Amino acid sequence: MNIYADSRMLSKGLIGGTVSRHAGNMRQTANQNNVFGKLDVPQDKMLRFHQTHSDRIIRIASDADALSRISRPEQDADAWVFSCGGWGGVIQTADCVPLFLWDETADVFALAHCGWRGVAAQLPYKTVLAMKEAGAHGAIYAWAGPHIQSCCFEVQEDAARQFSECSVIYKEGKIFVDLNAEISLQLRLAGLNAADIKTPYYCTCGDKENFFSWRRDHIRQNLLSFIYKP
Ligand SMILES: [Zn+2]
Image 1: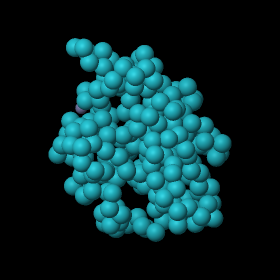
Image 2: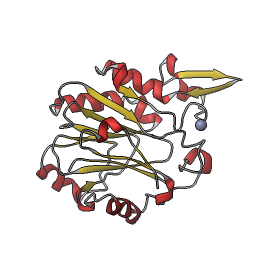
Image 3: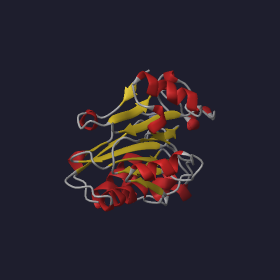
Image 4: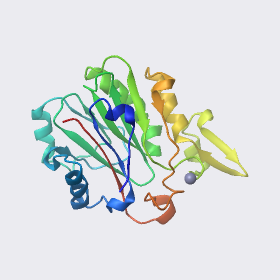
């Protein structure tokens, strides 16, 4: 099991990242809990939601907020914004972008499930705004975990039209979208410094050894991403 994570985030005391496929299919909660057990992350503090490729954000600002969510994992949403410690959030992906965000002190931190529909609905931008409303201060940092990269993310014309020109690549009669470019654009518009946005090139579709990919395999197998502050 490999965990892909940003050292800047870990150095702020946050625990999290994206777990390679060796840990199993994360559609099964038992597999998630095995990972948390190995990392000494308390599994009863990890919150879940039902992902729908929307721009809906759940904010957790207190123990009461968290407790009100923990019994409702079926609730629809696609991003977590935390402004209290002691809790964490889970998302599942198989080509979509797990986008990690945290502020200068890591008092406010977020994890968003950004499929292309979520990106087109401005979820990265809206998540930063929600962080600011939750009290984020100083610089906000971003890291995009493993997802389908522009090498493999071929789209049709109607999908391409929903993105900025700078994120669309025309090559040999095909159309590709660079989700990193689109997300970076939104994050800069939301006030992040370009130097604070990291988008490493791990392609879920191209790297079968480490990642599940819906586009590649058409099998319902998901990777786990999580963020947690003790
Ligand atoms: Zn690829």
